[in-house]
Length: 407
Ligand SMILES: Nc1ncnc2c1ncn2[C@@H]1O[C@H](COP(=O)(O)OP(=O)(O)O)[C@@H](O)[C@H]1O
Ligand SMILES: O=C(OP(=O)(O)O)[C@H](O)COP(=O)(O)O
Image (cartoon, rainbow, N blue to C red; front, side, top):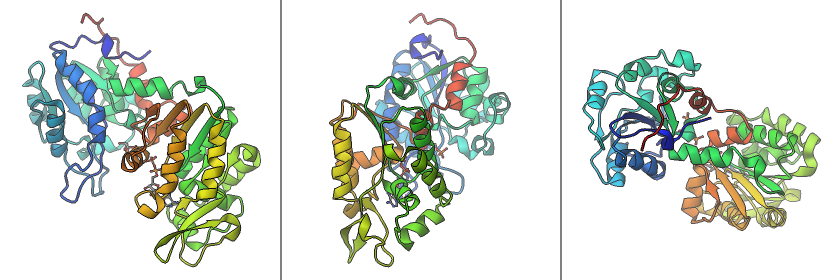
């Protein structure tokens, strides 16, 4: 049983809040999209309004990537979103960080530095070992309780996600609570249930497909995006060198065999694209699978009209649809229509659940809304869809007992 903010005595309590604000970063090295920050505003404002002293913990990017930057611009934007000053300290668990946390008064908020600036935070540990890392040992003495609102990172077994809840009374924030409510009870959603698996996380999507087909959770699995391309190749379609090279370069070549095994076992419930869109003379050009392979250098970048008609027919009978990953390279105007039309059709279904960071940003960009639930997580949502436990959620379940709420 996971405790929530309803179970927490907030007034006068120093709360370490782990959020996931891992976001696109602009050329100037600052935050370029505040959607993930906005998702956490409810949790943070509730804690502040209830008299908490809030220290925010988060990662941004991965070591070596261009988006591996400080959280200073995140703190600035958070201040605007919360409508109050938000301090930023360029330290996570050192004396400077501890002094800043000790200096908080009721209703104050500060953002600590990117947790991944410290190497241990980019490693995976079991919770007991994570509890003995520098980050946890450094912060434990200045925090009274821990709140995890970082659903999108809950599949990582890193110190700020599994170590802190091992040593501190711990609670799920409002984002975490809502995500677990929805994604934790998929099997109770009405049937027929259709899964749409697109995007580029091919191994994860194939795991989901195996799991939901094997357990009888999916009446149909519709494939699109790079996932659809892998299934087409597994089905013997020649997608041409450009698409095949892309799949090979991503390290997904072995997934073709797994997709073929899935088709052997559950082919009657797996739908494959009937046509694809390529760039020809700089314009979108659709080709039926019978007309493949495409021309030299042409890559399958989207699903076409005939696939959309076919998928719309299947969706027409569904009561629940669960979608992950765009249907094509939506960032390119020529290849956004598959994603827009497929997701638009899904909004007509009574229960429509969307997972995936890139998917959420695709939907915002394309102006598609009306879903029952849009998850803040990509990898975490996919892991939950296979009914696997998430390390950070397990750590919350096993966290030390909390004092009863009195407010
Ligand atoms: N046919 C395709 N070829 C190459 N890339 C694709 C194709 N379809 C979708 N993509 C890419 O997949 C990416 C998103 O996939 P993914 O990261 O799995 O989504 P999410 O973050 O929502 O889980 C997008 O950048 C999109 O351009
Ligand atoms: O953006 C995230 O995951 P997502 O791309 O699966 O949504 C999380 O912040 C986890 O980041 P990570 O995949 O670098 O551990």
